[in-house]
Each structure stands twice: as C-alpha cells, then as structure tokens.
Length: 400
Image (cartoon, rainbow, N blue to C red; front, side, top):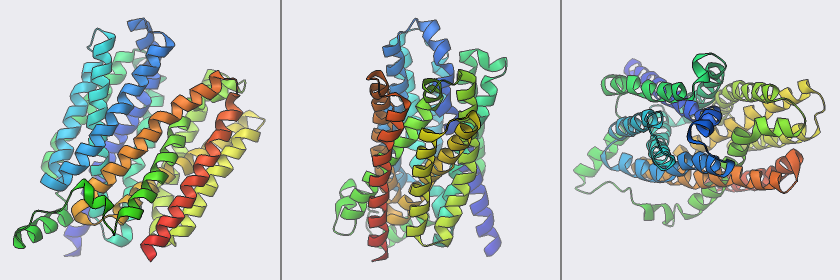
C-alpha cells in the first residue's frame, strides 16, 4: 500500500514543480522583455508600469476563482484549464499589435496563472501525509525561482534578445505540460474522499467564502491574510526592483542582473530547506528563523559596501524571502480542512497579490521622492515585523 502512495506523491509534486517553474519564467518575463516591448509599442515609463501591473492584477480573480472551483469540481480539472488559459494568452502576448490588447492578454494570462497557484499548493499538500506537507510544498514551490533563474540565463543568449521569443517559450512550455497532466497527474485522494463522504451524507461539500469567517476560521483567516499581504509586498519589491536598487547604489545593470541570479539560486535552496524545517521543527521556531533571516538580509543590503558583500546580501534575502513565501503557502494547507482548502488558500493568495501589486508601486514612489535604495529597503522592515507577529499568533491559535 505504501508504494502506490509514494508514487502518487512523487508524480503529483513533480508535475506541480513543472508548473511552478513556468510561473517563475512568467514572473521574470515581463521585466526581461520590457525594453523590447517599450520599443515595439513606443511606450513611456508610465505605460510600461501599467503593463507590469496588468499581469499581477490578473492573478487576483484567478486565485479567487481557481481555488473555489478546485473545491467544487476537482483539483486536476481546474489546474489543466487554468494552465491552458495561461498558455494561450502568453502566446498571444507575442502576436498582439496594440497597447490595449497587450494589457488584455497579460491580464488574462495572469488570471490563468493565478488560478493555478492555489491548486498547486493544495495538490502538493494533499499528496502527502500532514507531517510532510511543508516539505512537499517547499519542493513544489522551489520551481518558481528555478524558472526565474533559467529565464535570466536564456535572456543572456541570442535567442533571448528578441522579446517575442520570451513569450513563445512561456506559452509553449505549458502546452507541452498539459498532456502530461491529463495522463499522469492523479486527482487528490483527500478531495475524492471528501467528495465521497459528502455524497454518502447526501450533502454538498462546503467550499463557501463565508466558511472562512465562521467561528473556527475567522481569526485564522485574518492572521494569514495579513501575513500573506505584507510578505508578498516585500517579495515583489525585491523581485521587481533588485537590479534597479543595485543601480541606485552605483553598481552596473549587469551587476544588478547577477545579483538577481544569486537571489534566485539561493531562493531555490532556501525554499526546500525551510519547507523541510516546517515539518520537523516547532512552527514558531521556523517563523522566527525565516523572518529573522529576511531582516538580516535587508540590513545586510543596506550596510554592504563591496560588490561581493552585496551579492552575499542578495543571496541571503533570496533564500529567506522566497523560502518564506513557500512556508506561508504550506501554512495555508495546514490551516484549512480538505473541503475548503482550495478556497482558503486561493483567497489568501489573492490578498497576498494585492500586497504584491502595491509593493513595487510604493517602492517606485519612494525612489521618485528621493529616498533612494536605502529608503526602499528600510520601508520593507516594518512589513516583515508585522508579518512575523501575525504568523506567531496564527501558530499559537492552531496549537490551541
């Protein structure tokens, strides 16, 4: 009996990892293709900012709808459809011929990707025993920085110099993965069990938004929402602005891109290690370690003088800030029961995406107001402290 279960878990986490790699490619795609898109569509800086926001904005309704439908009609079915939507509209990004249509396809591609993310977390966590959920989600989610690092390398080749090739790659990869999902990805056993139980009891499985605010879940939902919001705000400030912050500090664009690469490589390692520690350590210790690590990295970025020190600080921030996001996703799968796990994680992801949208905008405003890189990094510190405090309250509540 153990072997099929192990096979089920390995196949599920491996396929979810592939989709996370594709998400990482997309996160980097807009920034890498920005110069080519600006030239092709004759955009100014303001319009380019709207282009960046369109994809992130699409993640919001995607996360809400994807999680909800995953609880209603099944994890596998919704994941395949959402990956298909993402693939089609990512390819369309290379074919559109007006700014408005460019915004529309980026929004719709973002919606497909946003719908996929809570389902990936839910599937990975439900493929293993509750004792191994942190590790499973960590292994799955480390695909994101892997994808981002791969695209950074592709961008340095002749193939990557044409901005359209970036979106052809991002659209064709999920099309290749869809048949793999159709034939090899198993449906969640926990979901099927909950469905069968609901049929036996002649009741519809609960997956309503209002269940997030019942007497059991209300405080858990608020606590995890606040943590997702502020943590993803800092994550996306770092993802969007790290190379630019390097240039603000007097380093070259190439050195900023190298820092981003170190950030992503260490993020891959950090996500796996923190995910494993989530299962083995007391949850409070993991939270103190990961948020303490982010703070140490931010202080290091602010005080480092040499290029080597800056690279090391970037790696430190990457390991903990992206790893922290993986741990938060694992917590989402622990906080909510099976019948509403997709809905709960989807809503928390959507709230986090609001923070993700606001973070880069606030960073841009601070830079425009003359606060410099140090001001942006300092502004991230209170966000991390708030997230840490709310997560510690959440752990205390779960244990109680």
